[in-house]
Amino acid sequence: MNPVSGAGRMGDDGTPRASVVIQWPRLGPYYKARSSAAFYELTAAGIKVVVLETASLDDTYAWEKDDGATPFERFVVLPGKIYERISLMESWRGMRTLLERINPLVVFIHGYSTYDAWSALAWCKLHNRPAILMSDSKYDDTERVWWKEWLKGKVVGQFKAALIAGSLQRIYMEELGMRPERIFDGFDAVDNDFFWEGAERARRNPVNYRSLAGLESPVPFFLASARFVKLKNLDGLLRAYAQYRRVMTATSERIPPWRLVILGDGAERKALEHLVHSEGIQGASFPGFLQIGELPIYYGLARVFVHPAFKDTWGLVVNEAMAAGLPVLVSKRCGCAPDLVSEGANGYTFAPDDLSTMTDLMVRVSSGHVDLQSMSIASRNLIKEWGLKRFVQGLIGALQVALQEERVILKFR
Image 1 (cartoon, rainbow, N blue to C red):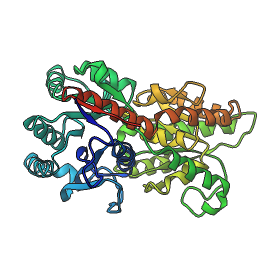
Image 2: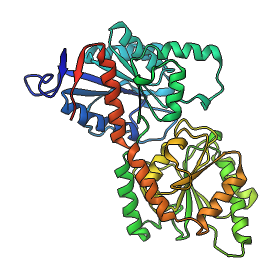
Image 3: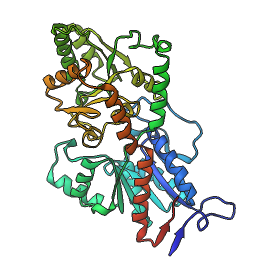
Image 4: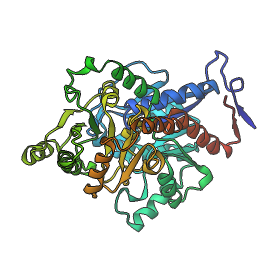
């Protein structure tokens, strides 16, 4: 046996010998937090963590470019390139060059259907190195075709283990042929402490943030955060919210309606603004896309979070909201719903095309008919089990399984 432990795998200079690569399309703030958590745990076991990001930029997310220091060693496979526009040959050449230089023991690969994932997997097969899949795909993400699923199963079969998001993702991974004992959850995690601490700072001094867009008024508000694309169903949310205001105005209890703040940006912004104008929807605002440092302020000052998506593989915004202590209203089509929403305890689920139920839930939570404080506590307690610790535990579990055939023993704290 070849033990990998703090004593057995350190070099003469006290640095780890064996390397594990974690590959991401681009090192956004969520991936950085997960990689850092993995770094601290694996380094203690004598394993060096090296992070590869495929490209410096992407067309999907407006994250600021982060060239700051990281605890882990970090390389960009294709510096200056935009992720969605790279070719297969570019990806293969860049990935091969860096992996040859690093010569990792294992490679964690983000996804199984992109050029960079194929390139990293091909390198692993050529060099007889275990590859571990990281995925949050579930069956109903898109219309499935049998022959494509068959081919996908063949690709998934090349991985030694999988780190997936939750229960729906586990079901799909098993359908693709991965054995249950090789599947570990916790992939989709955020830094819970970051969101809680930022939210608490905002709650202690709300007046300090009244100059920010959408926070000018002390009137309570629902919060949503998403890319402005059709699948996020933000037009449906606005229509349900318009009906909510009508119901609250007509009720004999005369409870003032809450506002609605929708964070984000994208191709549907003009259409959503036109809907608000044409339908005369009052109380709705669009502060725009926010970098991660500003998000906890909005979570901290909101009362309830709403995520109405038609399709979402997981929904990290729900993690963020719960970490900040918010009750949540979540579409049943979101991959996180079965794992993160305890019906009636920390929130409610609804069918995204059922606008009347969405309206009814907004009325219920804003009318004093539920204990929002208890729901807040329930959210925090539940999300504690789905934080960075779970990601690291899942990563280690997958790593141990993948290395069993290599007769390598991992010893962790």
